[in-house]
Image 1 (cartoon, rainbow, N blue to C red):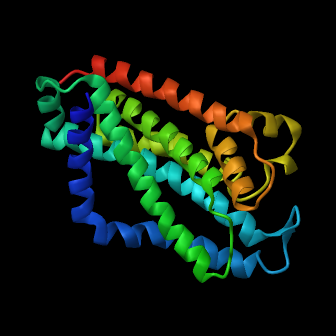
Image 2 (image 1 turned 45 degrees about the vertical axis):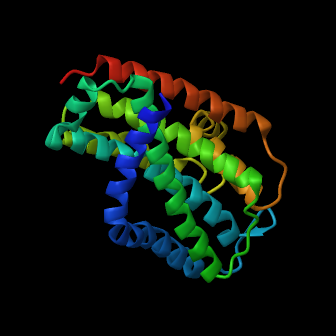
Length: 245
């Protein structure tokens, strides 16, 4: 099984390596625009729970970017399915379904981690100093695990590349803006906060921000993300089993 995971992972990493010179600018532009806009429009003199808005914003951008880049592995899977027909070769090979999902999930997590390094560098250039310790990286890995697993599951369900874009619009984009990334959800009405607390990104934003700002950590959020990630992983395995050529 390990060899199968490595084979899938290495393939995705070879593709990423060829695109890396284009990927890094694409990973940089949105965070740079957010940081530039908010640093001048909002960041000056605004405090949230004793921290500057920029200190609040960067962990939110990290949570959001780790989600979007981990979920982006779905697009790579669908290109392989619909255009290159490589998924058919995986189905005919002795690679197990668990190995296939594991390799793709690891590839999505790697994409997420690399994109976060770009945001960390941008934060340093903007003069924001945060704590990037072990708790931060564990939260980051759990968040990327959740959304990479979800990406593999949904990639097996969609019937066309256009359907994948629709999933991004209805699932990822709303979560990116409502998951505690740009504003504290406790400032919303109680019913809205209760709904948003059901989103995994809300818990990821909470613990990533707490780790960055040396605040008390929610152990419940860590275990919740782990449980959701494991659930999505096994759903992804089941979806791969049901996927047809």
